[in-house]
Amino acid sequence: DAGVIQSPRHEVTEMGQEVTLRCKPISGHNSLFWYRQTMMRGLELLIYFNNNVPIDDSGMPEDRFSAKMPNASFSTLKIQPSEPRDSAVYFCASSRSGASYNEQFFGPGTRLTVL
Amino acid sequence: ILNVEQSPQSLHVQEGDSTNFTCSFPSSNFYALHWYRWETAKSPEALFVMTLNGDEKKKGRISATLNTKEGYSYLYIKGSQPEDSATYLCAESGGGADGLTFGKGTHLIIQP
Image (cartoon, rainbow over all chains, first blue to last red):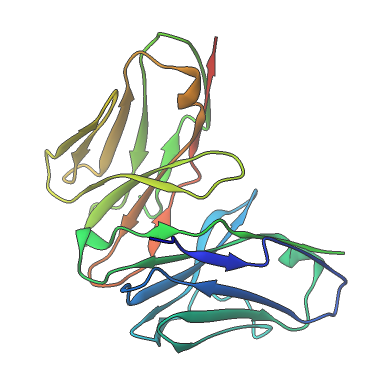
């Protein structure tokens, strides 16, 4: 089975531009999580969805960040406008809610650089 | 303890030696403790999930214990090998579909 798929793997953009990160969870998983990895703060939860519904977005840093999950097999994380401090690795993870004590499976991440 | 904390931050170990490191977490409203292994340029890979006080899990040369009353977990590696070099993350989860709260990890380097 394919794991969690993220695209792009690398993104370099200029300050002020819109950035869209994409995630396809593992088929059959109904919970999806977006995390951000930085040197200073480690891995932080940004937002998670259960059955395509956003449950907790308290980790989203600012209004410039938004996330959607239009269906069970696709989610986007958008940053508009982007700033240099948004540079980080963004991970998507999925789990089968209620199974294995919520073991989460991570995608390969998107390394974002905002110049 | 308000956050998930790991120590040490980094660790150099000679090949063949055994080692261990610590994860501390808030013991109130505890649901589960997760250990992940994270190699550079790869995605975090789940090692263990533990929920009960006194739980012990083992996978090959790696094992983990859990004390929910005092809020800590230990990860042990027996007979370290170069391929064990990675960052080891622990994370606490709430019930249902809650996201994970991660520690900053222990960066382990095995020296041949």
